[in-house]
Length: 320
Image (tube, rainbow, N blue to C red; front, side, top):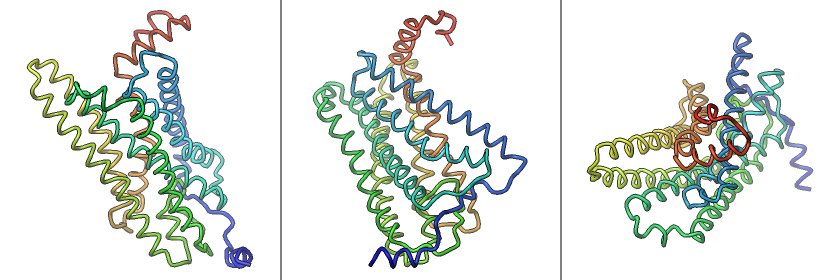
């Protein structure tokens, strides 16, 4: 009986993702930009995942987490960009209610997982640099597996709760989502039901999944920088600072834009600004993470050169 009442009350069968609005002159340009971005992101992250799995020298805690990050970035990017590319190419912006909630679930699940994974990676670097004598004992195989599994499990649990409550809402019109993917806040704005509890729940879970990991990341890098300052060699300090600064820039962009979108009060006068912030953590960070965290590492470069030689690439290609 409950299912029958739900069907009678719900008139919306599909949503319309407005994306970046009606910009006929820019549709092809945007399509090409996002297509190149998607291909580059998929190629780089897939390459890193394969290298870490196949090369025995990369079977260390740091690369275990980097492999998890790259694998997650492949899935993460694929939840939004293919649908957006199809919309830009065909002009069809519709998405079914089921498809919308499915996209919301997987995107939220992967975002939450990345928040914790970046924090764990910063903690791993803290132990390696600041507590080298205790690193092997603390960052053992069992602990790595537990942390990785815990990140995936907790992220799944959190987004399941939000989607479960939001899916009980009634959507009776309008059906236009002012975003390029199905997100919690735009969906709640379309609901005809009382969403105060879902808003509060989303804020609480968003705070739990962003603030503690972000603070842990900042604390880890603060200790790392303090340790770096004690390095007698100016060349060593410069190299270490270069690595830490690039890491901090990426995590700050990722955490900062997420907190602006989900935790700060909504600004009705600048709706397009949220789309720009969303692009930062949904498109930009998956693209730059492989370069910042993996492709600059000597071990990854060595594994890539070894794999390239096995494939018969000339040395001139390897230098590139």
